[in-house]
Amino acid sequence: MTEAAEASQQVPAEELERAAFYRLLAGLLSAPPDDPALATLTALEGDATPLGSAVTELAARAAAAAPVDVRHEYEDLFIGIGRGELVPFASYYLTGFLNERPLARLRDDMALLGIARAEKVREPEDHIAALCEMMAGLIAGSFGEPLPLARQQQFFDTHLAPWAGRFFADLEKASAARLYAAVGRLGRTFVEIETTAFEIAA
Amino acid sequence: MERDSDKQTRARRNFLKLASLGAAASTVAAVAGRPAEAADPAAAKAHGSYRETPHVRKYYELARF
Image 1 (cartoon, each protein chain N blue to C red):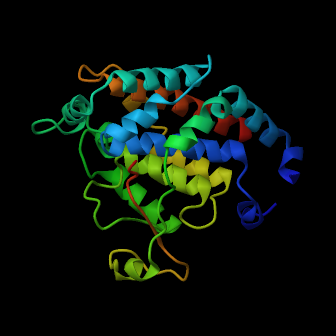
Image 2 (cartoon, rainbow over the protein chains, first blue to last red):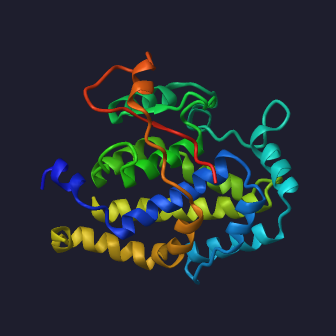
């Protein structure tokens, strides 16, 4: 089947569910959840699988969290004084500096895919939340036609696989992380599933 | 549905189901909010740093709940 024919098909449920996980991670990593968002997170239910139990833990931590504490936690983790405990950018993880070659490569790929940073977004595009948001959009077709799986894998392998697992593992054990320890666990588990699932289809 | 005859695709879907994407996904989808907003093509044109292409350029927005 040609790429175009494949892309114009309806996106199957299992694939759309991946987009939902990416969106959830993007939402949590782009800003701390407010009170209504925490209440919604509390309603999450998972099963006994690694991903399911990560979801359950996220719900439990959301239930125990106060919005003001979550805001401080987010600042300590990602913003801090000068910088937070973690620097959630691909370029920093891969080179030790911001705005290096990994960002340039991402910008090249974004241009090819027809994705650009929204005017009001200030962070460089290789922020983990932006990359999760892009994956969600590429899967679901928010930027046009849904991207064929092989090209999703290319994007994932280039821009997320080299560092996202390490970032989420760091988040899971970061000293400032409470709610975000569960986000780290969820992200790490999800990236492992993504990696395996791409390998199966390759 | 023709993709279901593809062994690898079926294996992938089965794996995703077993990995609990299905079990947790219904609640996750409910909280994950709207998909990224498609942008106004006129706004995209004004964005000088990107090469113009014939198709509509979409902007992503960092997700918010």
